[in-house]
Image 1: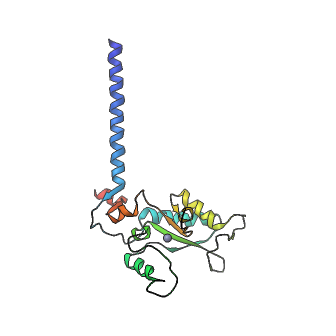
Image 2: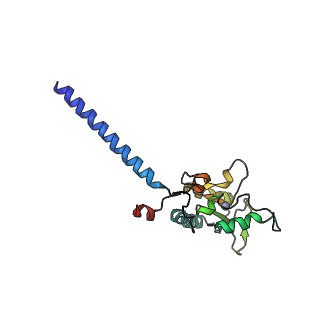
Image 3: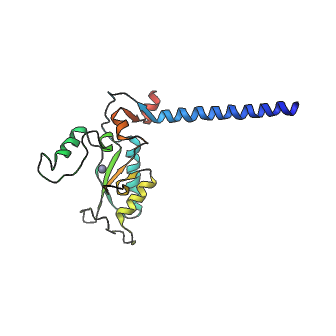
Length: 191
Ligand SMILES: [Zn+2]
């Protein structure tokens, strides 16, 4: 009987432990996204974590003797629509298929990069090997970025967007349009 009781207590403690863990897991998950509704404010700058990882990426590339330049980061809805018109109602080549609100750039969650050589010229050649280690600098940067948690446009199965890096926080464009936002530390402390 005593053995039976201790068995119950042990199982009771295990179940209690799992419930507590489950509670905190859910709690922290909920904290990562915030549903702010249809009128959710549109971000006006890069998400702080994306900004931090961008700077880390630049530093890590420098260690490999690769100079990269961020050609685009946060893009407002107005800027996006103007870009969309390029090659359509405005002269030039089409540069994007995304209208306002249809790209992670509009939510401060994407950046674009290029390489820069010693003369200061921008390099768009993905085979360029400026640090002469037998590997494409462009792909080396992509690898670093992926290790930092970015998704790389060069990995997309359809249209490949080689300069593009995004951090989605598990959110789709649809969710962002509906007013879900990745929480920033600032938002979390306000809660
Ligand atoms: Zn991009």
